[in-house]
Amino acid sequence: MAQSLKTEVPAVLQGAILPNHIAIIMDGNGRWAKTKGRLRIFGHESGAESVREITRECARIGVKRLTLYAFSEENWKRPPIEIAFLMKLIKRYLIDERPEIGDNNIRFTAVGRLEKLPADVRRELAETKRLSAANTGMVLALALSYGARQEIADAARRIAEEAKAGRLDPANVDEAAIAKHLYDPDAMDVDLLIRTGGDLRISNFLLWQISYAELWVTPKFWPEFHKPDLHEAILEFNRRERRFGGLGST
Image (tube, rainbow, N blue to C red; front, side, top):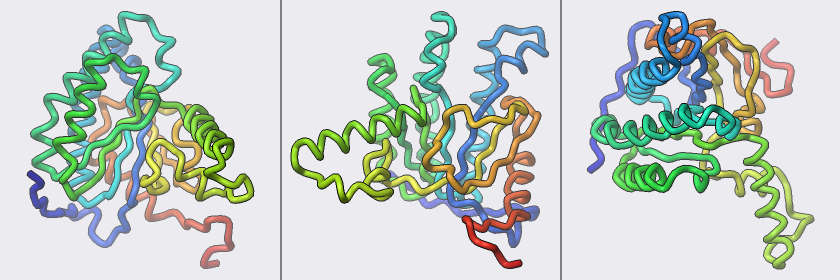
């Protein structure tokens, strides 16, 4: 059952404008583990703790949507043993976090080529989505087997199929029509894109949705990313002037 979560804005963010949609490229788990002399899987396990902390904080302060880049389409190229561990970790997260999702009134969803995921992971995805469907707070989206170019290609394919079937006039294919055929048509554009780990690239993530997002990169690895870092990114977002191609206030 959906619960009412009291929004609590910390003192450091009082008066700040909150991004409606925050997306995060959670990078650096493996590199962080290496600095500790541990295997990459240790970094992935530790990164799950940051997922819990940041998700809870975003829901608490009133962010409307949080999209986390959990497993990219390109990640299938990794060693089979690492992929198997990541799938096991995702499955465990989906099961273990259900009470947390419920307590924080979060509505869960996932985007990507989900059909490529193992059957047991797809089953737990569907169950977590079902159990949280009545929640009315923040939407938490996991990007799994996700690639932005693939998303746009899949949308184009569905549009072509509809046009071939006579259900869509090609003359009516505009930005709205494309957006309607993306993995989650209800997803709002990204306001703030955060990347951990220091790399200055987008890595095929939400290319359509981040057209006018503010980018914020930290050298900290994902397991090191905590609430103060999230607050810092939001404060920097407030210092930016978003012009959307116009001239702005100046």
